[in-house]
Length: 209
Image 1: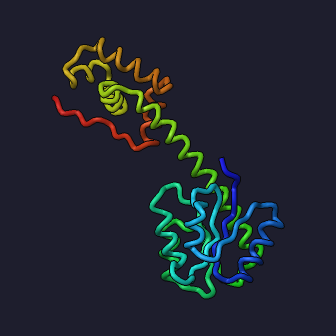
Image 2 (image 1 turned 90 degrees about the vertical axis):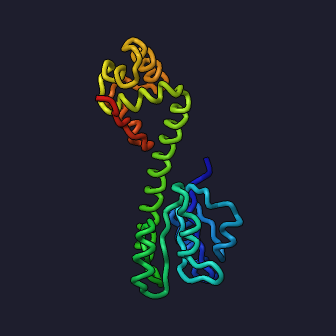
Image 3 (image 1 turned 120 degrees about the vertical axis):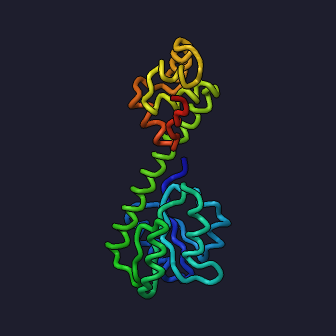
């Protein structure tokens, strides 16, 4: 995995230099870009890390870059910097997931604190996404029948109830259920429910009386 990096995107050279020195002196890796377009062209948007982003820039603004990046749940946390307080812009940015919105000239301790929070949030997000990827890979191993039975199991139905719903024998349900739990590496219904909730798999809706 790539090294965690703080990405600075600001069209003001003096601001970029100042933040780069501050972040580097704090022991963190840092890369700086003069525009949103330069950042996108660098393929650095995969992270891991966080972004310190100027609001007002020529061509593509900070909020426009945020909109481009955050269509993907793997988007890095963003800290916005602005030369003036702009309540509507701040509200929109925070609603879309920005970690903080700081006014220039930014206080050293405020910026470093926001960066540390952002890096911790990115690490947590990536851990969750790694878990989701692992679960999806396991789910792919299930046959259609095993998947179907899984959705009934997480609805808290007994084997005999599932058998009745699917018009198959209880022994057949037990076989498919055993293979399903083995492939997923779970040992209890509670574990299975948590696994399915993590990736958004809904319980089956029963249709027979």
